[in-house]
Amino acid sequence: MVNDGDAIYHMILGSPEDDVPRLVYADWLEENEQPDRARFIRLQIELEKYLPEERPPAIIQEVDELLSAHRSQWIPTHEPQLRFHFRRGFLEQVHTSIPVFLREASRLFTNWPILTFVPSGNGYFDQLVGSPYWMRLRRFWGNAALQEYDILRWADPKLSHLVELSLHHCGFGASELQHLFHSKKSFALQRLHLSDNPITDMGCAVLADAECLTRLKHLDLSTTTRLSYAQRIHAAGATELAYSSHLTRLESLNFSGQIIGDGGLTSLAGSQIMRNLRVLHLDSNDIGAIGTSGIDALIDSIHLTELRVLNLRGNPIGNAGIRELAKWKGLLKLIDLNVQQCQITELGASSLLDSPYRHPNLRIRINGNHISQELITAIEPH
Image 1 (cartoon, one colour):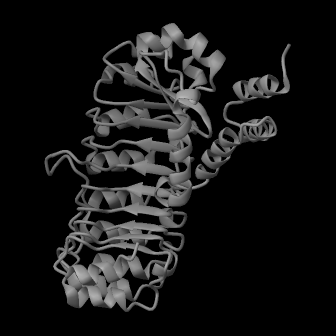
Image 2 (image 1 turned 90 degrees about the vertical axis):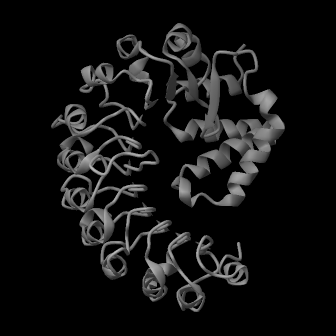
Image 3 (image 1 turned 60 degrees about the vertical axis):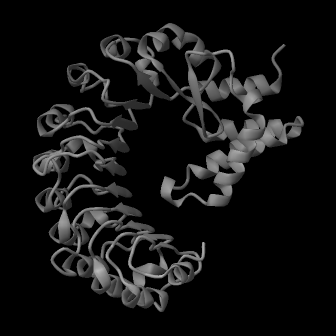
């Protein structure tokens, strides 16, 4: 006999992208003496309202504590070839090889609302996208093990249904991006991770012109590898993106490790693609190397009105740059400012401490500069 809980769970399996059945199931769990499971579902759904950098630490801590206390009950322990992760309260993400995924796919989708697949190992991408289960996925996180020719063969329309695509360290440059995103038809894609790829300025031009990326909200172009100077993104690449007429819904942009400099930041600050931006990562981008023009453009921008997180770590903005930031009314909206390793001394840091726009909910990270621990503690009370 099917009880109410089973019926609701089957609704979740039938509509895995819908939060409403999940919340209804949480209510049922609470009414049936499973308050921790109900609380976990509600909290994880609440976290999805925030960008990762904005998520309240108190909610994250409570989620972690609940999962730690109930891990053995909530996560299958008899699946040695499968690794699961929770999202929106349920086992929604699976890590395994493509052959194992295909072998177990029917059982996986029957038992859990699987939407994300993270493959391990090499090859078999043709078999994956040729299976009926590929179109049931919404997020695919590839990596360097992915065979480049495989994904390029299936670029359109086999990628158009995904809302999140990660191609970390896949060796993709301008020509590969052109092949992936040449379609005139709008993709569902909202999150695109291209970290540690030799994007170059030409690759930025391709992304800027991609008509299929009009729904994109999160773009990760960061690098932590030692790409050559020519393989990285410079001011010209940032300017190409700034002039895009398609990337107008961006909420998060990550240029970490590139070399856009003051010229690139100036272009971005003057661009309408920044009007919805809430998170901007610019660490180690040579900003401030030739003065404060980039920081000046940032604080004078009429478009960066929604910014909540600003990462300037590792840029030589110095005392002049931090003094300009201290005068910025935009600090009132920020919840996180990272100016670590920015060649700031106590003279500059004091201006930030005395800023009329500094507020208790603003987390400032300033260690790694030439300032005393006492001043660091005063600026970083968190």
